[in-house]
Amino acid sequence: MPERREPSYLLLSTAPSAPPSDLQLHMANASALNVYWNDVPLIHQDGVILGYRLLLQREDGGSVVRNITLGPDVHGYIVSDLLIFQNYSVQILAFTMKGDGPLSEKVYRMTDESGELNGLELKRTLLV
Image 1 (cartoon, helix red, strand yellow):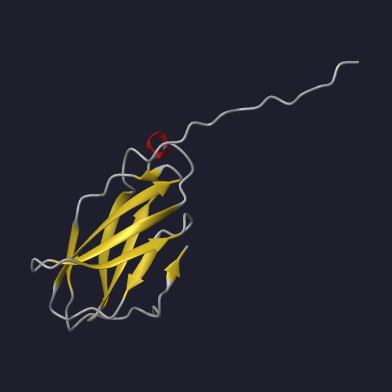
Image 2 (cartoon, helix red, strand yellow):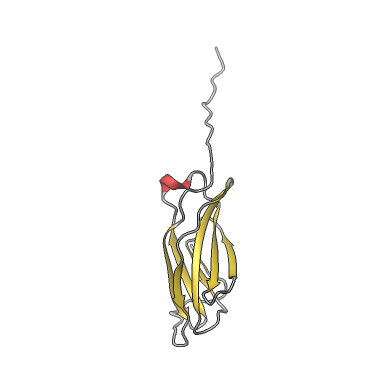
């Protein structure tokens, strides 16, 4: 009897062709911002998403303040220790083993002394 072989598949992976969707930036308190996003649309994933990169920038012409790499199951992050009364922007991208996808459009939020914690802990809290 001939040996039965399981079919094999070759998955061609590239970098994602679109950024994660629905990027949101909300104030957690005077010096922290909550960042939330959804997956890259399935048709644009172009491989297995291995993680996300968040880029946080002060909007006074400064350089990137934080470059944060997160796992593929994380869809929220609290960025703490920010300056109060500063305007920040955040962008996000997803990556596969073949590289980084495109950055999202910038989303802006100003920190404010009157911000509230809303019961969230600010020590590098990952939201899954």
